[in-house]
Image 1 (cartoon, rainbow, N blue to C red):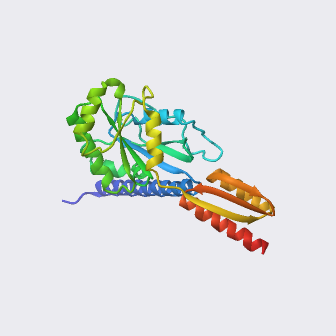
Image 2: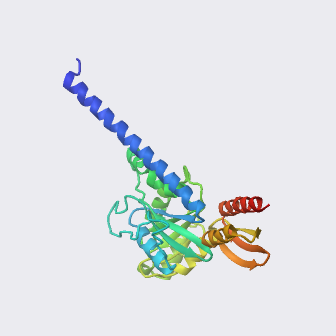
Image 3: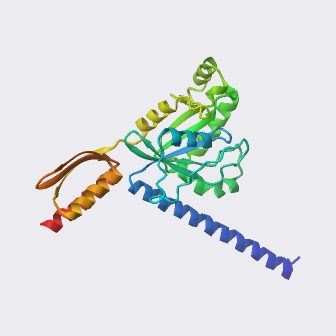
Length: 288
């Protein structure tokens, strides 16, 4: 009952292919992890769009980017894609699409991800792990649902999304009731009340029509981690001018006073505050 020489060779080939694919997926996941760390160190808040397929995530990404005065900034971040495809079919978004936006004082990177599907096979979930990593490790997740569907369908899809997110998610979740242009206000209120246990305090928008996008932007700003304030006193040197320029690029600067010393006050993410203190310490030590 031996496999035979050909069958044994074929089995080894398949095992090798599986091993190579696993190595490639691990490499992609590591690359994405490193990219997230770089973006945070550059002062960006990371916002991920999640939800069921055909909920309108890609349309919402483009709407947020357009309405929030996007600056692609290709030189600093050539990895940011300029478009997010929108079609009424499954798996239109297979990879991630990230675009830059400004929300109040914040520099935000919004990422569109693959849509969830009920009873997705385990092996397929593993294949999308690197894509879902953008959701699991974001600072904020916008869970997008199609409010034009029945309450039963929405509830079922919210449960599916929550099951996927809560396993490894680290960020707060805001539910976005999308496609309000397809239902009247009374129906939106009725569905909001019926889904309150799964979607507390949701934001109702129409990505297609651009309705209530400003409200969503305010909610994003409110839900993201608080900025820290810092005041640095620096020696008047050329290196200090470089640091001041760096702080302008990575933080929200309130005041800069130039005299015998440079005094700069600003707000930023904790990681940026930490970096600025380290750079300031090096300047002070060098001038002592």
